Amino acid sequence: MTTFNTQEFLDDEQIARRIVDYRHGQAVFSQGDACAHVMYLCKGAIKLSVRSTTGREAIVAILGPGEFFGEASLAGQRTRAGSATAIAASTVLLVDTHNMVRLLRRHRAMCDRFIAHMLARNAHIEKALIDQLFDSCE
Image (cartoon, rainbow, N blue to C red; front, side, top):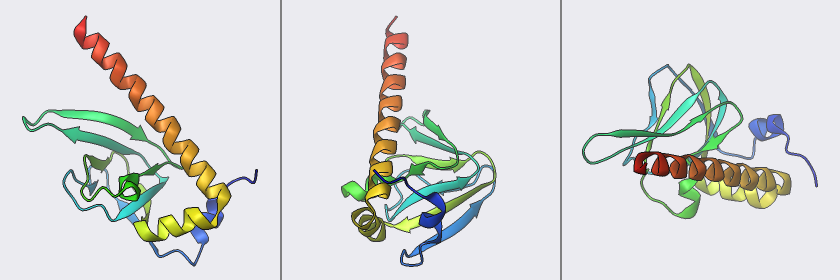
């Protein structure tokens, strides 16, 4: 299996993408926004959260450099189910959903890394939710 080269991914000229800098506290996207991009955190830290209809916020994950987020657009989700907020000055690579699909099909190592990353993050979130559920029941 070939390894994923992050710099090659960031430098690939065949991918329509945009690099955006966010200040501490600035929203990358908000719950209810349209899903149009998959994001890759180049530097900084991002908080993923959801807000209930009563206004309570739950933090789903804290992301660091080298992590993907906003991938729900790949599954056909039209609007964001949660929010992403910079909790430190951050640089984010935004890749259009259609271009991300092409990239994943074209680069096996990239696809393998992306899938492994998503599965690991989902397992972590699932464990945290289960822990929280049992803690609140006891």
